[in-house]
Length: 116
Length: 381
Image (cartoon, rainbow over all chains, first blue to last red; front, side):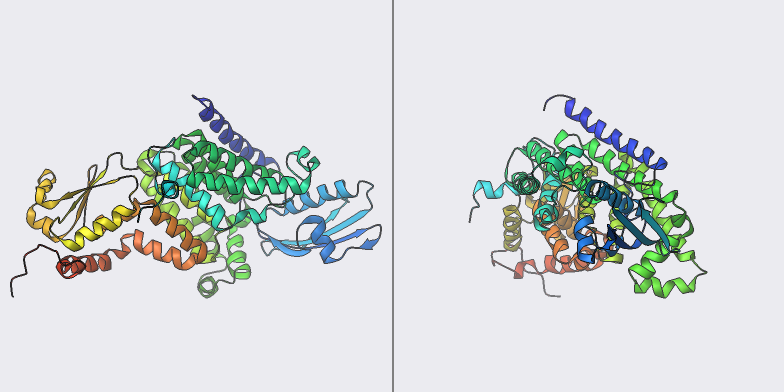
């Protein structure tokens, strides 16, 4: 690495982050925009594949997240993760997922996959 | 007993490819990764941000990243190829972040980016990185309705953390008022830091506000937020002005205890940052320090800064990398206690006790250690 190139690449890395911060204003996702610990989500995940329910252990293995738990980031990260996992693992669309959640201690809400 | 050159390398900061404070920054990040054994959290690829990564053999990929980060961190500590080691370690850590949505976290991405930007060799990049971090964090909070109303902090501190202080204080205020104060206080601090950090003349206020803010958060929650506390504090080194010339230490050359203390401190001074000059050479006259003044305390001179007694001793300790390595290890082992001890030591809070102890030791220095102190006996009162 010589000359100004490393500095220029570093500036590009920083500019990409400013782009991610601007982009985050147009999406509920908060990846790479420095929004840590900005939302507290308590959730419970229920999954059935072809009508058969998964155990908590199976859900943990499927999403690498506890079936009942809390997340310190945007709740939409959890929904994004579940949706991507289901599209990859069950492309035939046999899975039904229901996430019951509360954001920052607010009222209970429900998110479903596939989207109604 | 002399330490082999390779083992002494972590304690040398100068004469390398990067400025001393950037070398220390890289080494402290490396030590954080090792002491917390962070690589245990690395995952096999899982819904990666870069799609092709889950096409790679999962376990070999995970093991390769773990080995690369461990070896990279060791190289940062013991090698002279700091830039290469920082680049490899940062790149591997960033690869771990983008390879798994389950592993993804701001603290890991931030640590990886600090190492990558350090490899570029320009302190401004690190400063801008920290400013962007605070800008993104402050902006997102400012635009979030639960942060505007105080609901976030009320729920987090009250229901999630069950913080006794908050639970006691919140009912003393109208509903959500205390939560709102903390929320808007946090937003104000983060946005102010994002501005202050862009200007060199505000470096010291930015360092202190950021350090006190993050230490306060750790004391309040008891959490380091995985790597975040460490990375956010270590990054502040990019704002520090490192002494360009050796620091002149004016000491009592006729005092045996002082000579022993000098030898002990010198053992940790592999960079030769301290230039010891006995007061008996009359060097103090350069800075208007009389013999009588010098007889009472040690002095350090760094640039335009003349420090005396306890504050001089504290400044000397802070310039030694071994102090920061020990401080880091202490925070890893016992975060709350170590942060309280560090805050007491590094802030003026410790001055009254520190000065009193220093004065007592200085007055009685002819009684300690090797009794070769040549100071005349104190006249009977």
